[in-house]
Length: 498
Image (cartoon, rainbow, N blue to C red; front, side, top):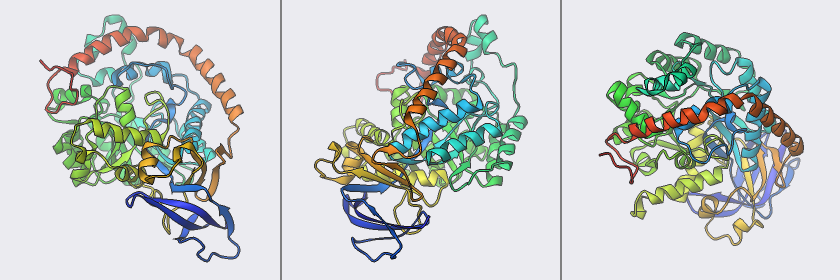
């Protein structure tokens, strides 16, 4: 790859709230030196002119679902549980080629908007084979991104996971919801192990993780086996924990304790483990995570979109939890814009209460979207622009209206930048975005493929779409009833529990 000297740019220092002129030497995709303008560089270094730009580390999306990128904007009012009822409508009939296209579409969007690494809880067992996962990994490679692919695994259905839900369905819907091809924990873990044993992609770019998708959807055997498998292979773990009040109440009905306490008792929590969402974590939950070095991906946009509530990110940081930031899936976000995710994280922190001293600062949010995400993904050489780290660098155009004028760079990166100011993006020193255009992607051809795929899936999934309103009526009313049960922390100010 050779040597590149980046000159003329200003490097954001989030903690110091400044962006000083800085030059960067990159050798074979790795940052070799960061220093003042004009520091000596090797004679054979190629000049990269960054004049008129402000630089920051590539953003790390701490939680997304690559399988949802063909599903953006499909509904305007639905909860997490209603999202699950529509899963067949959105995700059925996905061939390996379509799984690749889903992931590729999202990856192109992310890198165009300054994100260079994603933690993707992708198609799970039995919906993704090893060949499927390798194809999804190649989508990220082809788009020029890094990724952790953690297929969502489960051995219980959604209708079994929520206590009493299946029995509340009328007989006609019970017949449709009944599990007829159950995969037990041994089969599910065996498929995951096969993927780990047969992974062929460069793990410095795309690697696997293990994601028991939602603890309520997993038997204890699957949770214990997931933890053991991940640690045997040295990969990371991820799960949706305490995302909605329905989940939180269901855990007490099933186990007499919080979801976090249950999975901690089963050995799932450790420094390799990430909680997605964590809206309904209490102090004991957060202490368990902090004491074992675990992470939470704060997905504020999705939490608002699905009406799940507002996670207490300030308390997480106070207790020592590593905080990352994620967009969540395009079918509940509805985009893959990490700048928007950062801005949402700031705004929801503010509306938790009038004590402004407890609101997240923009430097804290930048750290979560870079360093915090790097820790959660297990990529140890990303998220920071410093010697020894991969040259994953975003260049924002100071001629963009977002940066006219430059007042306080940290504030503007979180509160003003919206992705339209992204001029260039490097990943491992490779220029993946140049002058606002993806250097590897034919956008016209991609648009044609996406439209054709959308039309085909709409035809194939029409029967599932037709029955969806009946499921929505039953599931919606049942889960609203569960959510009115008292819980020891309340984050719906307008919800009555009487």
